[in-house]
Amino acid sequence: MPLSWAVVFLPWAGALLLALLPRERPAALANIAVSAASLGLALFLLRHPGGVEGWTHVDALNLPLVLLSFVIGLTTAIFSLGAVGAERFDALRLRAYHVAFQVFMGAQALALLADNMGVMWVAIEIATLASVLIVAVHGTPAAIEAAWKLFILCGVGIALALFGTIILYLAAQPFVGHGDSGLSWTVLHGLAERCDPGVLNLAFVFLLVGYGTKAGLVPLHSWLPDAEAEGPIAISAVLSGLLLNAALHAVIRAKAVVGVHPGAVSPGPFLIAFGLASLLLAAFTLWRRRDARRFFAWSSIEHMGLAAFAFGLGGPTANLAGLLHMLGHSLCKSAVFFGVGHAAQLKGSQKTAAIGGLAASHPGLGWGLALAIGAVAGLPPFALFASEFLIVSDAAASRWWLILPLGLGLLTAAAAKLQILQALCLGEPTPDAATAPPGWTGRTTLGPIWAHLGLALLLGFALPAPFAALLAAAARIPG
Image (cartoon, rainbow, N blue to C red; front, side, top):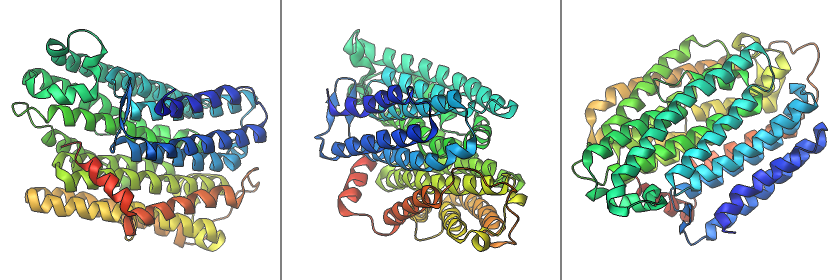
């Protein structure tokens, strides 16, 4: 079995194992073991020669995202060791949660590694259905509504993406004939210059809107705040850190194909427009959020918009900034959701007014969350500061007229995050809930938070030379 397929099937095999474990702690420990084994196997991809293997391929663009996915998968599984007890799942819901989690991880890996557009589409759909199950697992009216909205809106998006996939296949069919070679991203990139530019334009519009829905880009973004606010705590880290990246990765692949044809409409302005709209809407909406998890879900929309904006600018510098932003956002936002979720369980509410003074009442949690929020706000020396600096610098050099809306969005969002940082971490301590949630331990929450912050610091301040070379190679792929 090719290594890329082994990386996909190991989580799915783990899902079958977890379906047989109804007890809470053995299932949570098995979930950690499967996630650790998946990460270990994915690390072997660093020594993979790259290239196409059937329906999959490994290159500089998807390799960092795959490794990031399994890092976050492992830390989320560790976090879940304490969180599952606080969620108070019964045996059936416990099985559904763990099984859906590993099904999601396998589908996420396949979505990133797929060279075949149809396989990528199926993988993202599997990941979406697994997300729907996890969001709905509590069975409360709010959770069911959030899962239903996720299913409907992302269902519309995936239908549009399927239509775009078919159109792009039809553009290649005159040159490759029938068969799945016309669905290969690698083949399409090589023959895009000979395809009909009008068909390429139409395909890209459908792919951008379809996968952009799953990436949380405006205007089909409204599923994201509900899903991240109402689902189990750990799913917030998975949705913001993984599913959004897989969808935006599909858009980047489509941009790389369409952008090759000199007669096709440039994809860049479309991504810039969607990115700026997402950034500005989210930045101003942050000031009206009173629910902590919903607040940071809107921040995910802002950051995905900023990454889309970077890829819209195009070129090695902006593409590098966009990829670095995706990596940094996933690490920092997952750390935020770990901290906010733990705090919400301690206080008995996820309302901002109910959570305060964490640095005084719970110093490890409070200061870890404060640093994570500061990192998400773009403060140095974390990865998002480096990526935002590169984005602003490249925009100023190539399209100076975009600096005003870009700067307005960045400053407005950063001010809102610094305000909530003060409220949650540095204000007057609020009382804990009368009954402490069972299962929480400092190590299962603080370990993942500080691990993510350490990796985000490494990306922003001391990027290792081999990984920097990998990202530089990745930046040349989108065009």
